[in-house]
Image (tube, rainbow, N blue to C red):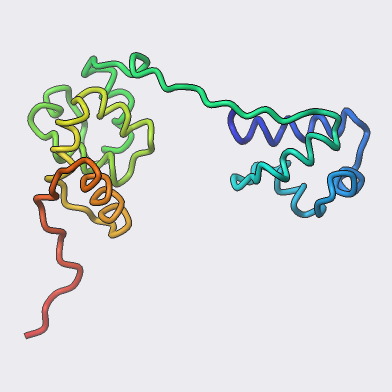
Length: 171
């Protein structure tokens, strides 16, 4: 369930129960501002608080994990291009670019894409090849660099490119 639909679901159940924010907050032993955040799409849910809200509404909280199906990500270059083309605002991406410029495409996806974009490329190239491309990337963001260096280290792959210099040297 998406966070926005969970928030909407909490609000819908509260209204269906005929409770105000303050009444539900009191029943759930939480604050009105916290409950308001939970109802308006706040992304930092705490399971303990969610459980208290569910109990106050007369429900129980169940959390489950759903596996990601790698088959749901296409290996067809046209499908890959359709899904990641929004990240290439300065260049019209073509199928041939996936073969000609894989490191550049990987750089753009890991700098500006989301988790699904990374999964799409990982599925298209294969995990080892994708990580090989990542190891050849130059990172614009220090956070992205640190994150991917940690991933590469865990996978036993050395980062082969040095980062861009952040500032010019004074001589």
